[in-house]
Length: 249
Image 1 (cartoon, helix red, strand yellow):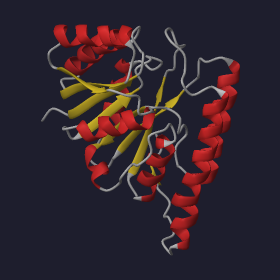
Image 2 (tube, one colour):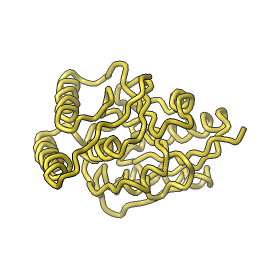
Image 3 (spheres, helix red, strand yellow):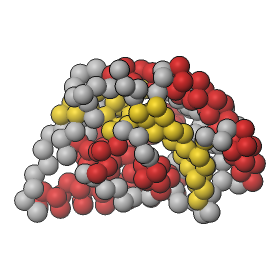
């Protein structure tokens, strides 16, 4: 059988304490699974400590590609760069903070088949401070209700997606609401989902860029605008959004 072809990328913003171990685990996992793969790190304007780690990764692992943003473009901007740089049949990504175990890529690969376009992870149990869990749950249910996305955990950034999906949808947002935008457009286009349970771990280095008051306000405003453009205006134009096809895990 032909090897599965996967472009792997990680958005990285000041993840100096985790990105090196993620590279090692990714190479080990991809080679164990006998994937035809490439590995890219999208550095979204990190500071000097992370830049030094990335320089060392380039020296030690020549096949790892580093794409650098001179200025921070936001989480969505990093994802858009990663998707645009992919060359293989499938794209796998997760965050560079190592709160997900990249070895569980194997769980997604097992579910990827001819009738599947996206293998979406869902978190078995979040290991975050209580306030972050509560805010995360509110965000999840808000997105689910507003956009009708047919997955258990929209906020789980552990995904394996056919690259051809991005031939049919265009992402425009540079903020964290890109995941709601992406899943809404993928669902509306009729692509087929399956889901896989994955583990979530405590953050060991750095802090989340999402959980502060000003960013939460901007996210709420952004979600409102996204709902108007992708749901209300879409239907007013006479093109009612069909339900996405969701397969049981």
